[in-house]
Length: 553
Image (cartoon, rainbow, N blue to C red):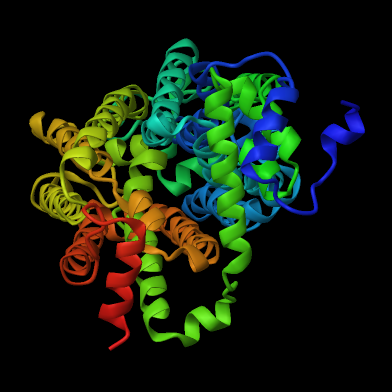
């Protein structure tokens, strides 16, 4: 068979007899790839997703340092925007990701995302100031948003049916694992470079490190090297006289640049993986679909069966009427289902999960740990997050969807409200006017915050159910548009939370900040109890029938 014949589109779907003949004649399109190798390669994209969203937690304390010390001179406003730009880029990537992956192919799009990851990472790493890092954080977010939709789709369409669900679940675990890898790398680099510190060239006489810093009570003199906790805590009058000669702020660049390694691995690995057979079939390129399937299946019988399945599905999709957004919104029952999907995404972000993912050293510093300890202890919270994600596999398999969601929101609300109480009655009475925690704070209080945050992360990750619900509540005819809108809303609220959290901590304190998040999660709990439908015990067709009957009234 010629290469041109192999790649031609067929005007009409072939019959089962023709498919049997095509399978017999069509060779594999490349070397055979086992499912484990395929999944390990593709989920480098999810690991990058996790690494790039987690690494900023350890990088931000160094970015806060003055430019001459190697930092970017961030304040709370710029810190929020550094994270918000990634979330805004992810919303953009999620919106256009579906269009690109349909037009170019799943494998090709993931390879493009690997290049975007690389460009965004290098751009951020070598940014001379905060205004340059903003657009590159947006580019990095584009890759994150694209990976959040493209990688699960590639796995679901390429994996055998019997392990499709677990493989997609592994993809979600790899995101959390990537965050843990970022925290470990941050801790190792922080140890190698020391906690953020700078060398003083000149300063007014009589300057003393404030209470709450590791050097509390130590005189600050020209020629000495001091922690940034000490120098940033000095009064504004003293800081105006301070001149720095250097520092270890460039550590943040090493934390970020490590992400180039999995980006290169993803690009190289996807080059030798097959394209999604279902993408070929959706474009009537059945010979190529068969050739790709043969690379990831063991027998011709499996290939023939799945090819016939894809052809039958394509026939049904051509017969179904396509729904526009205007029709979805003007039809009462689909509008209500869409609103439920949007709020599932919104409430997932207002749990405050990404405040913990991106700002953990800041949270722990506010609780009384120094910055170096905060970066190191982030590994502990990241471990609880990863273990929670693994436990989530079992909970989702064993329990009803609504039960998992109610468990998550109940646990998150309680842990956040208790956390607010610990800050209000325990930690904030020991703070000075500048927000520094006194050295006489009871030793157990910072550790109590660490425990509560770890419990919060475990509950949130073990109860993450919104991705499963989003894949099940939407009828097939509106699934693509509705899921895209819901995921876009998720990333927009991610940006809002990421952008406002530093301001909230600075102006509302830990108690006010976590009280706000706790109340929001009480509202989310009521939403799960009253509005979220159960889907586990029904087929997707039955879910559609139930929702239409319920919301058409």
